[in-house]
Length: 168
Image (cartoon, rainbow, N blue to C red; front, side, top):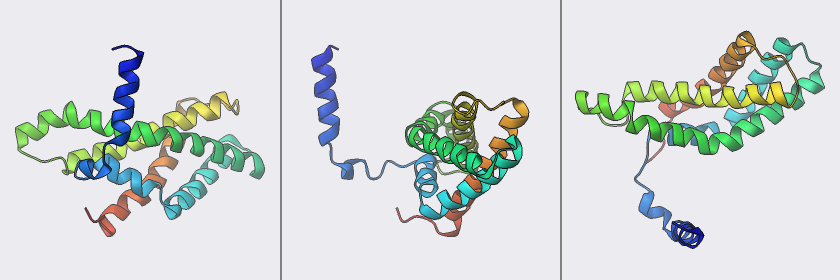
């Protein structure tokens, strides 16, 4: 497909009604919407700020800036990467066990995988920022604690899905 074909396909995708895709949902999309709420972001930033300050022994100001920049990057990239990771899960491992067990997409294994994928995506992006933008030493120990901080902040958004389920 040439450049012209790519442009035509891209424009076609832009004019497709979002209502046509309204019933195409998988757990990663639902989790992402909760992770982007003001209260999940605020609580997540607080948790991660405390961990980053302790982990890297940073000043208040530098820890705040590093946390904000890393989380901004993980939010921007996560908006694309989390749904892609969830979609990939649905088609490879998910398809196999769902077919064998006769389960739909909203099952305990997929929910657990969605949580773990969200933690991994955010941690990889944030660890990259800490290491390459702020030149902090990120080894397995630091990666682990950044992952724990992400797990705690994602757990808040994750739990809210069950405490107050979205209306589909």
